[in-house]
Image 1 (tube, rainbow, N blue to C red):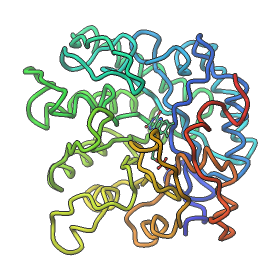
Image 2 (image 1 turned 30 degrees about the horizontal axis):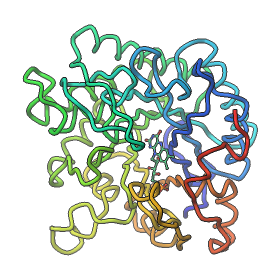
Image 3 (image 1 turned 45 degrees about the vertical axis):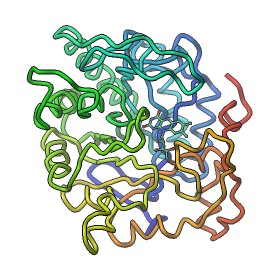
Image 4 (image 1 turned 180 degrees about the vertical axis):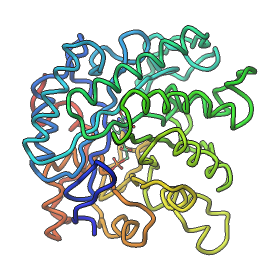
Length: 368
Ligand SMILES: Cc1cc2nc3c(=O)[nH]c(=O)nc-3n(C[C@H](O)[C@H](O)[C@H](O)COP(=O)(O)O)c2cc1C
């Protein structure tokens, strides 16, 4: 089933393999994606990836990005560069969705639900303290999402993804650990969901009916890989159904390992079901699963000294076969293997190259 075409509404994919969004920090300091990025994405499409999701692209030059070399999705020149990516991916037979990103608490000039300190970067560089968002900030962020979403439609994207995961702006509203607000945007789950849902509604309004909107969420965040935001299936059900009501079409469930059980403390089948599986069962939307497909190291260990190993994709493919997920996103293995789809389809997964963090230094050997 993995290599068969898939469609939902307007989105038609030649197979169920998705390129996971991966930040590469290779744009110019003007936030314009380069020709090297065009080639990087087109190459995966040429090798038959069904849906290419872009790296997180900053929705504004105000607070959304963490580094100037993160490509952005705001000015005419930045949008035109993404237009060249769309055209190249289409020419190669693929579909394309930009991931709309607001770094929030982890931005270069951070804003978030509550004021406070954030842990340093991976290399030890301290991050500036977070300023709590006020009404003007809410309006500014909603406006930036509205603008970016309309531009995604204008340049012919096949879908767009809202980055609602990993401790960045939208996720930091959901998380009890980072949201200490006492107004309508903090406290109960209903209140913590409010801002991410406002964003989903603004995006839906902006793109109109029928344009596919994906929302990515996670239990974990970068500052706490063990975080559990939804403690039980009931809480998860409230969230996934609220996203559907807000106009989201597809849920991208970010886990470190696609096949890990979500609530292992439960009995029997319930205890074995993955977060993607629960999301699909409790909600009414198609689901993208992700995490450790043909790699052994989880995200948090990928930057250490351990070496990755190539593994059999079969357990992840089983998720699709048994209806726990509709699509499967592949991240690091697609950096190491632009031709991942044909290699794996031919049964040659043992021939895949291992992911190594050194591969992040360049875009396929082409520096911008
Ligand atoms: C270098 C790198 C950059 C990433 N950047 C993003 C990002 O911009 N947005 C996002 O949602 N996830 C990001 N992720 C997470 C991936 O989308 C994916 O969920 C994760 O790598 C697990 O999939 P994998 O085990 O197949 O690599 C990044 C991962 C890596 C390795």
